[in-house]
Length: 92
Picture 1 (spheres, rainbow, N blue to C red):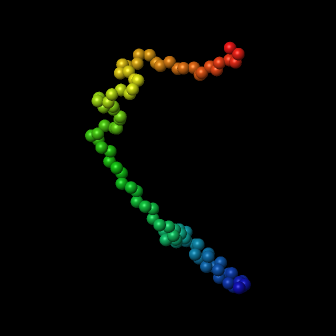
Picture 2: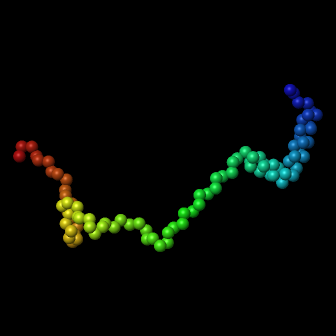
Picture 3: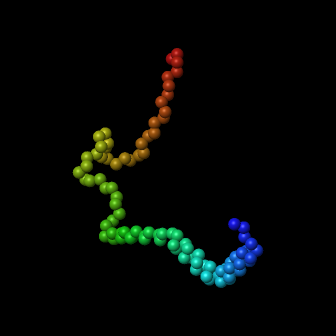
């Protein structure tokens, strides 16, 4: 349906009136957004930190025997690092 100049003038006058007050435009926009989106979910409750318990650390039990092949003596020097294997030369 084609619009006439009277219809266009009426539309322009309505838009001028509608957009004249920025507070009304902002309020309408906020209402449209609020109606279109769901409110965010509530934040999960914070878990309280137990103040009387120390942080978790693994401490071996005194009854645990040492692993097989391990000495119970403390190591006094660092372990040696082995070099890569050497291939035998042909003809030797």
